[in-house]
Figure 1 (cartoon, rainbow, N blue to C red):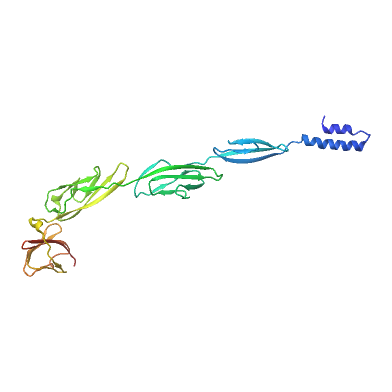
Figure 2 (tube, helix red, strand yellow; figure 1 turned 90 degrees about the vertical axis):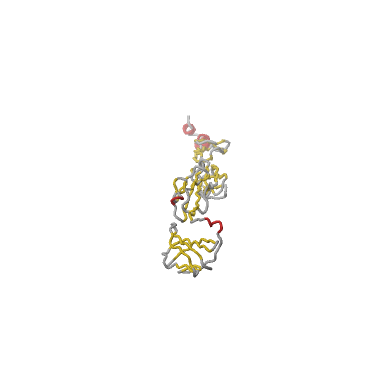
Length: 305
């Protein structure tokens, strides 16, 4: 029998007012104990591996939690999410010096903090070492990763076998590039053989490139000079000369030979007035050999008109 029925039975003719008051009081008291408790809803986000305590209940996983609070037995239904930020810097790297190496993380959006103090989304590695980053998401949850960057020194290749100068008409010269295993290229080369027997007087560029086991590479450049040589070369002495726009002024009488840069003779003779005329020569570079008694000198001149 419910409260309302009981109250109706009490409403008899005698003491109607008193009975009515008792009935209303009974209904109020019963309502306190029979009314349903209030219900609320909330959403929580926790970080992976962390937990929180709510009214004595440990929450450490995603899901739904029904928690009752006193007094009043009010019920709160919690929907719990777990934030799991992620960041990766990839595999450890070995790079060559003078190589711009960016470190670009992959992972969750958030605020990045690097071991070198940077707060940029990416950085560049300038020295060898361990680089680490921490990402913090909107819920304050973090993830981190690190990567090792090793910066290797580039190789230092050399070319051996060059003797300066190589006399015009000499035999071919074998050149050696070190460390072995690189590539040699340049003027008048057949593999690593410089074709001196075919080389006119002049300068020739030779290159040697080498790449080591780490992929680091470097190239060295050298030159070979092919020049006119003779038996008096070991007794060369310096003679002062003055070169003007049209002539060479000597300190005295001398025999001379003027060679074009390819080794062909442009002029030869003996001067008695200590002057070699240049007016018959075309603009360009020439090699001048002078002979005076036991003295010989060789000069390179450039004629511009």
